[in-house]
Image 1 (cartoon, rainbow, N blue to C red):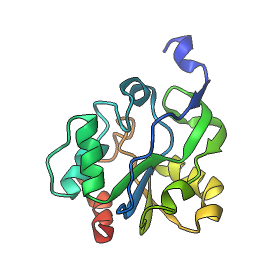
Image 2: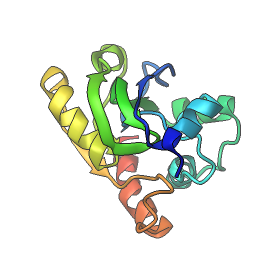
Image 3: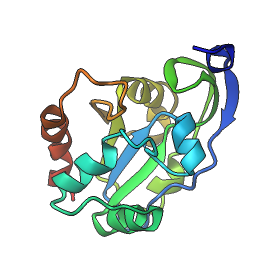
Length: 169
């Protein structure tokens, strides 16, 4: 691993949240990975399983483009955002996060009919609980990370865990 990858950098989250007034489920990651920032969209690593598992849970084809993913999420009443607006982080290593600044979840909650909040990984859940829960009053359900780094969780296990969102859609 090169020294550049080991160095922490301050990252500002610059993706708009995906939601509208009909969104019922809020899916929260931690912070966009370097690959997601490079592609300019949520869960942008080609081996990240988020869009595949969510589309399978909803019984739809895997959306390919950014526009397709936005349309898919809105059509299925799914809001997508991240817990953090900024932080120091080394690459995509959530355990290296320092000096986090949370997003204001009320931006979505004031407009959307959110029935449940889901964190797509343990670190997202921890950060949400620490920085957002008191303001939202909504518990976040922790789901397994869909990151390629979480290779111990099979696709079948992801599908089973993420299937819980169906009851809110």
